[in-house]
Each structure stands twice: as structure tokens, then as C-alpha cells.
Length: 407
Image 1 (tube, one colour):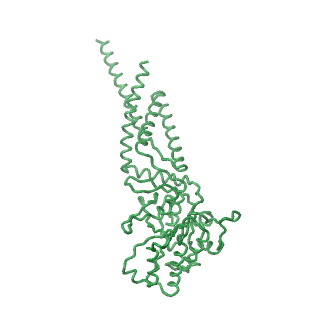
Image 2 (cartoon, helix red, strand yellow):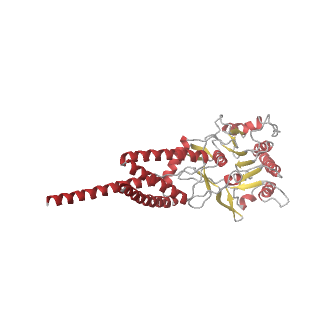
């Protein structure tokens, strides 16, 4: 009976140690002290575990081949060809079209390019008028002197898109193409940008397009709304992915009048979220991701697809504190009841299994990853100190007993 009481009291002291450690770890975690370690872990898991895409997002990519054959390897892209591409996409009645390219007029446009730009702006106005499809364009601040250098008619058409009249019902939205690097790598995607228009903060292309896909209630330690991207690696135009179709294929092979209600021949673009952007080498914005360098258009598609699959969400700090404390106490109980060696092996094995399982669940089903490693080591050292104190007290008693016997 005294032995059991001693274990119970030791376990209570371990509870205090585990709770104190969990409190310190949770507080430091909230201040970003463990970001570097977490980023390495997230990158490792992103490489090892790639979820299947949702099939709800499609990247329409302007590839190197398209850039050469359709646009004569010339930038900015021919607005007339872009207009034809947008018109073709509209026939498939997608849910949302995110256009990750600059569409505003430029100073040097003359002749055929001016005509093509008129066609592009008129096409955007036509497809967005009373449309069920959400058309999302990149907002780029343009100075007044630059606007004055544009063709007068183009300027009026562009400003009519930026500020449509109250009588018009254009399903047209403006967003920022801002992508934030996290220590040189794109791991998270923000929902709001640093840009403001008329004192209203602009959403990013992801934030504007994903507001119907999932609740945007995830924030980081600084209060910025963002989501972890679980990369699939399937939005790269390598010719094998079903999530990517080239602009040339859309223009040539896809029927102009898609039969969205005909189940025998469904369109792969119907009711999908589409990202239209350049992946060609000369004109793309490329960023480093856990899977390597990736075009911006691919990153937007990956982020939207990740939102469709419900990306992992951080739990509250109170829940994290409670779980880490409980893991520490469980490890302490195993070491107390099974001894320091066997108990340590059981606790370490159990923690490793929980770590792997929690990580897999996190990336597959959207739950948060919980780490009890700090509490585990704190309790382990707590037990070592307890054993050292017991041995010290035992040696003192033996010394006193031996001294009394000798006396």
C-alpha cells in the first residue's frame, strides 16, 4: 500500500512537471519560436505524403508550346488570343475562373494589338454580364500618367470594368496576386493581401476564389488569415496530369458549345474552379515550394485544391496545452509502472506511433498535428531526478545506519 501511494504522489508531481512544460511550450509556440522546426517537418511530410487532388480544380496553362505556337514567343501575350481563350472557357460554364495574368492596356500597343485589346475587354464584359461564373482578375495599381498614355477608348473600357455602373450586373471581382514567402518557400497562402482599393483591403486570388470552398477562419500568430497548402504535385503541365490542360488544347480540341447537361459527354471544365495562367518559362513567376520550383498559376491551383480538401487547422492553445500535458503524464505512468528502461521504451514507441499517426491524419483529414515531445522529455528527466533523489536519500540512510552500527 505505501508503494502505491508513493507512485501516485510521484505521478502527481509528474503532472505538475508536464503541465509546466506544456504551458511554456505552448506560449513559445504562439510566439513562433518553433516555426523553423515545424517548417522542416511540414516540408518533409509534404514530400513524403501527397494527397490525391479533389478533381474540383483545373489549371488551364499557357505552356512553352502554347507560347511559341499561339503567341509567337512574344510578351505581353496577344490579347486577341487571350480573348478567344476566355470565350472558349465561358462556353463550359465553370464555377470560377481565376485569371492570373495582366490584362490591362500597355503603352506600346498599336494596330492589331489595340484591336485585340478591345476584343479582350469587350469579351470580359460580355462573359461577366449576368453570369453565374465568378470571374476574378488581378488588380494592378496603375499611375495616372500611365493611364493617360493608353489609347483613349481602351482606357474608358478598362475603367468601366474597374468601376461598373450600378445598372450593370457584372460577376467580376478584383484580387491581388500577392504570394508570400515563408523563409524563401511558399508553404502557406494568405487570404488577404497588403493592397487596398478605396480603403478596402483586397483579398488574394485564393481568398476571393475560395470563399465558397471552405470557411476562411485560420489565422497565424500575427492574426493574418492563411492556409497551409498540402501540395499534390499534380498541377504541373507535364503532359500526364488530369488536373492540367494546355491553352492550345482548350482552343483546338474542346468543343465550342460544351454539353454540360449531357452526362454521356461531360466537360472537364464544367462547374470547376479554373486557374488560367502562364507556366511558360519566359513569362511565368516562379516560386520555391516544398516540392521544388513552381509557377505562380500552379501554386494558386494547389492552394484552391487544398482548400477543397479541408487543409489542416491549428487547434486552440488550450487544447494543445491539455493534450501535451496528458501525453507527458501518460509517459510518466508507463515509466513508473514498468520501470525506467521498459517504461521509457514503451513511452517512446507510443509517442513515435502517435506522432506518425497524427501527422498522417493531419494531412489526410484536416486535423491538427500535436507534438508531445517536450512534455515527454520533461517527464523523463523528472523521473531521472526522482530516482537520483531516492538513491541519494537511500545512500544517506545507509551511511547513517552504518555509522550508528559502527558506533
